[in-house]
Amino acid sequence: MVGYAYNYLLVGSWINCMLFMLEVVLAVRYFRHSSRSLLHRAGMSAIVASDTLCTFAICAKIYMLVSLYPSQPPHGFPRFGLETLTVILCSTYATASLAQLFLCALYFNLTKRRVITVLLVFSIVAHLSFSCASAVLVVVTGSPLGWALITSKIGAISCAATDSMIAAALLHIFIRMDATSAFRGSTHNLLRRLIVLFLSSGVIVASTTLLSMILLLNNKPAYSLFFFILKGACTP
Image 1 (cartoon, rainbow, N blue to C red):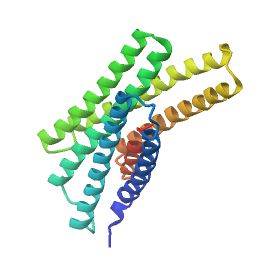
Image 2 (image 1 turned 180 degrees about the vertical axis):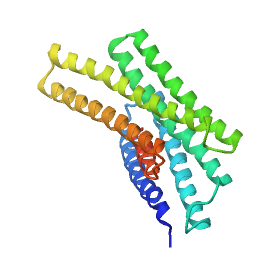
Image 3 (image 1 turned 90 degrees about the vertical axis):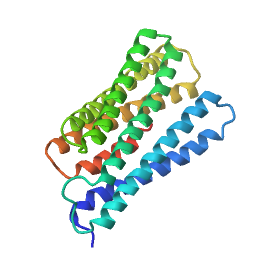
């Protein structure tokens, strides 16, 4: 019988797998369009590959925990747990960074505003650096606590902030285009759907990150549930 402490981990991993399969379906539809450029196809392939690695790491971690310690979590931090956590951290935020770079490229193509685009890219590099530093600290110190936890929190919060900034920048452009440009009715409808998409995506990611950080700071086991959901939500 699996211990109660694993409930959140198991449910979180199941939700993550469902989100991953949705991503695979959308990726297949994306690749069916022959008009996509080689660079876009390479970027999408990297996103799917990174997310695949992360999903396998999550499933492997849950399987090892439940198989070796079925009744209750182990004391301390097993080596396999640290290794899978390192893979999860790096691949999760690598996926998020690639998706954010796609949106930054879209913003630049629409506006040609180099200063804002550079600031957004700098924010992406910053949160990815903190997350990778956290993964390195986990391996070096043999613990996900201490500075590894602090840098992980900074990386997660700054990633959500970057999502919100990119969403706000694109929303501003789409709202202005919808209000000032003379498009056909179908184009206006598409712009409005994009506005709703970016608004909802930014709110969902930021809210999930905030909630997971609150649960983590209060040492609540439900943190793992929202972390796995966040991992899926980080991929637009």
